[in-house]
Image (cartoon, rainbow, N blue to C red):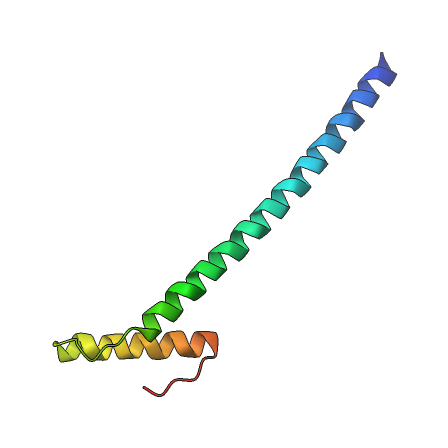
Length: 79
């Protein structure tokens, strides 16, 4: 009985470890995907023209945000 219980416990631990490794790989792929999406979103925001914004305060906010994004990603910024 003890041998059976020890064998079951070892098998259960092995299965849980394998499941944990699979979950870690899934999480890593998901976070890589999310990072790519954030990068794409930031690139799109920076590339959109801001000349058509009529409100000077909001226009300044957009320009400052673009500067922050460029600095965050290490992109050149001429704003």
